[in-house]
Amino acid sequence: MQAIGILESIQVGVPQTYPLKGASATWDTSFFRIPVAAPRMVFRTHLDGNYQADTKHHGLSYQAILFYAAEHYPHWQKELNNPAINAGGFGENFTVSGISEANICAGDILEIGEAKVQISVPRYPCWKIAKRWNIENLTDLVAATGRTGWYCSVLQEGMVQPKIPIYLLERPYPQWPIALINDLGHGRFADIAAAQELLHCPILQDPWPEIITKKFKNIHLL
Image 1 (cartoon, rainbow, N blue to C red):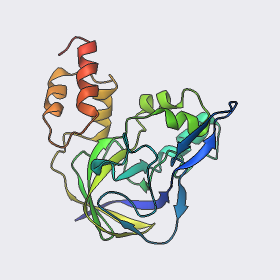
Image 2 (cartoon, rainbow, N blue to C red; image 1 turned 45 degrees about the vertical axis):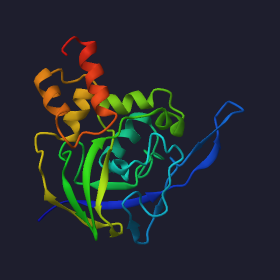
Image 3 (cartoon, rainbow, N blue to C red; image 1 turned 60 degrees about the vertical axis):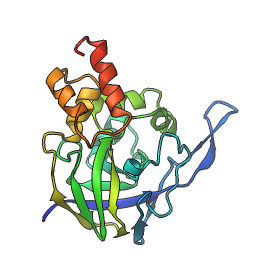
């Protein structure tokens, strides 16, 4: 069993209503997640204390927990000139060090405290990222940089807490780092053979089959 990272912080949020800057309208979101220091239970469907506002597009079984790499935050702080963008700032539940899209793979089975989880798919960036920070092109920047974060499903429920190690138990698909799936889905890697192989990978979940199929149709490869 190999330790590959640290669970640096845990964040949870519940749906709340916020005003849209410069408008009379409001929006409901749980994107504004707050850190918790005490141990938390990881359930099959969610992290204790964390609930989704948009249950149509979020909160499915393979989206039980959202991870984000701590190493991304210094880059965002510098590039956006905003030191307030920090752990939890991209809506993640788990902020982790030692792990990023480059070295975690779809299908990886991890042990974190008492819980066991399986990495599923990258987060496909949505408009809420830009709304959260009132930066119009931030969603596009997240997609372009590949600093998206990634989801997991829960194989074994259990307690977790900040600052504990993350262990890699199994890696059934070493050929599919999250970064490569991002590159295929966002058009940075136009390899038809890789796209076709990925579409047959049993770990791949919605919306990624449709995203990749559309992307490759658009460049006349499928």
